[in-house]
Length: 515
Image (tube, rainbow, N blue to C red; front, side, top):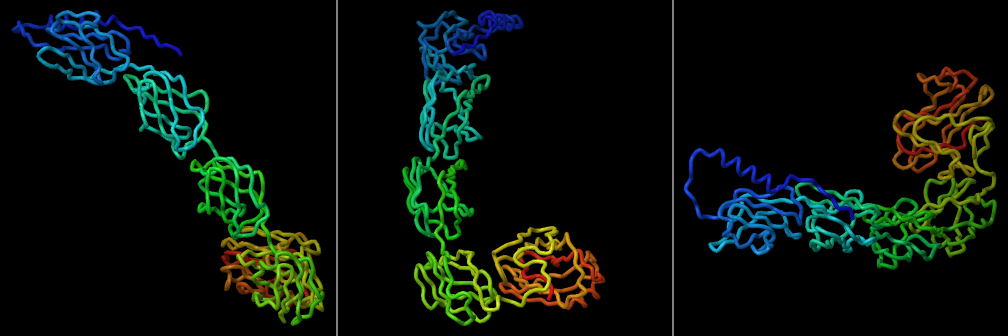
C-alpha cells in the first residue's frame, strides 16, 4: 500500500508566528484572565498520527483533550504542554468535529471543527455476490468512507455496519458486474476505483424440459441462481414475469399461447440478459394426408396428421368464415365437410390457444379452383418477368399467410403515406385481353379502405377502384377497354400500381392477371 507524504510548514512555528503577530497588534493591555481559552488549533488538513497544535490561554490547567467521537487523550500523553500551547498526536480513530479541553472546572469546546486529510486504504473486497446479499470491504480509515458506487451508477451510502477497518453493505438489486468506486470524505474528497471487477452473480441455465411442448403447458427450467430472474422473454417477444414456481434451482413457467420455436432469454433486475443454449419447439397440428383428393365441395374430407386435437377451427381457401363444426376429431384425424364455396389452395388451422398454423398440403377440388387466367402477373409467385417495384410500407411476396388460390399471395402492409404495391420490370400489350382480375383480402382494421390502380405512372388518372372487405376475399374484374380509356395509359403497360389512399394495415392480393 503506498503511503502519501506531504511537506508541511512546522506547525509550532506557523502558529507561533500567527500568535505573536496578533499580540503585536494590540494597543492596550487587557486584564489577565485565569479562564482556559482556545485561540486556535491545527493545522487544517492534518493527517491521523500527526501532531496537532492547540494555542490558547491557561492551557496548563487542561487535564485532557477529547476528539470526536469521544476519544480522550490525557495530559500525560501530550507531546508537550505549556500555558499557551499544547501538542497532541491525532488518534487514528478521530473524526471530523469539535475538540474539547477537559479541566477541573469543566469542558471548553472549540467553536469550529477540525477536519483531516484522510488517505484510506483497501486491503480486501468480497469478489462476487448475489444482488441483495451483503459484501465486506476491509482496510484502514474506512469510517471515513461515504459511499460505494457500483458499475453503471448504483450508489450505496447507507451501510449495514461501518468501522475504521471494515464496511458491510448490501449489493443493490440492480447492480451490474464492474469496478467499484469508493468515495471518502475529509479536507480533500478521495475516490478509489477498484482495479478488478466486482462480480454480480447471474442465473445459469443448465437445462429445460420438455423441449418439445404445447402452448400453455408448463416448462421447467433448471440451473443455479434462477431466483434472480425478473422475467422471461419467449421467442415471439412475449414477456412472462408471473411464474408458476421459482426457486434457486428451477423455474416453472407456462409457455405463452403466442410462442414460436427458439431460445428463451432470462432477464434479471439489472436488465442483464441470459440466453438459453437450448431451444424449445412448439407442438402444433400438422397434416400428412388429405382424403379424398380431389374432394368435391359439400363432401366429407378426412384430414390425417399429428396433434389434430389442438385444432379449433379451419380456414378453407375461398371461404370467408372459419369452420369449427367437425364431423369427428381425434389427435391423428379430423373429418369435416368441405364448404360449398371452397376452392383449391392451402388451409389454415387455428388452435385451441388461438395460434394460426399454415398447412403445407394443398386442398384440391374438382376443376382446380377459379377459372384459369390467360395471362398472369402473380399466381403463386411473380410470372412473365414481373417484379416487385413497390415503395413505402413493406411487402412480402410470396406470402402464405392468407391465400385465395394455390399456395401464396402478395401481402402489402400500407403505412398511411399513399404508398403502393407495384408490378414493374416487364411489359405487356393488353389489346387482346378482355378483363383484368384481382382478388383482394382485407387484414385486421382495413375494412372500407380503398385501393386504386395507377397504370404507367399516370398519377392523375387512377382507375380500378377497389374497396377492401376485412377478413374476406373479394374478386374485382375490370374491363380492359375501360382501364385503357380512363387511364390514358394506352395498350402497352409497363407498370401496374395498387396505391392506397392513405391506407394502413395489411392488404393481400392474389390471382392477378387477365381473362
